Length: 79
Image (cartoon, rainbow, N blue to C red; front, side, top):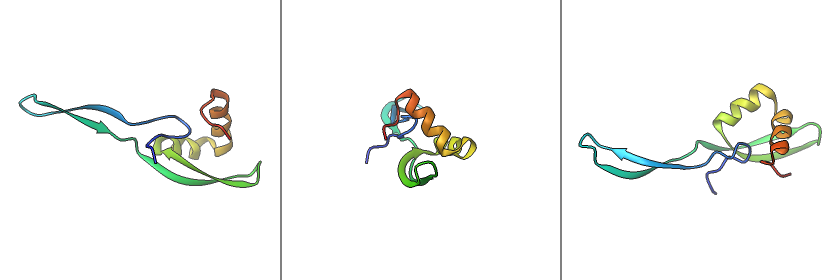
């Protein structure tokens, strides 16, 4: 499973660990991705999404239907 949010498109970033002596080694910043089921009342079905926790907070605030509509308008979500 790739670490990509299906709604926002948030993904892994790369950077450096920097020691006190300013030595730099490569590291990765993983996105905080969770798998969550949502019920869509308009369609009468459940969907499972891999989303970031920031997107989950947005869904809790706006509702799943509004977030999916915005994502479809932007072209991020196909379903």
